[in-house]
Length: 153
Image (tube, rainbow, N blue to C red; front, side):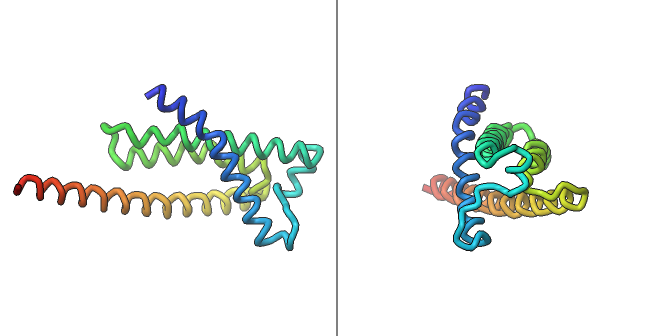
C-alpha cells in the first residue's frame, strides 16, 4: 500500500499541474475576452509579482493533485464500507482543497466566500461520486451476470 501511495504522489503532482493549467485555459476562454489569465489578479498582488503567482499556483495545483491521487488509496481499503471510505476521502480532500483555494484566491476571503466555495466543491464531489458509484454498480452487475453465465455452462 505504501508503494502505491508513493507512486500516486509522484504521478499526482504533474496531473494536478496539467488539470490546473487546463482550467486556467478554459476559464480564460470563457471570461478573459481573448486574453490568458493564468491566475486570479489578487494572487499576483499577494505573491508580489505575476511570475511568483504562476509559480505558487503551479506548485499548489501539483500539491492538490498529489493529495487527491494519494488519498484515492482509501477506495482500496476493502474492510471499510463505502460510507466510511467516502466520508474519510471527502474530509481529506476538503482539508487539502480549501486551504489551497484560499491561498490561490480561488475563493473570496470571507465566510460567505468560504461557504460558497465549499458548497460548490461538495456539490461537484457528490456529482462525481454518484457517477462513479453508478458506473461501479453497473460493472459489478455485469460481472455477476457473467459469473452466472459461467455457472450455467
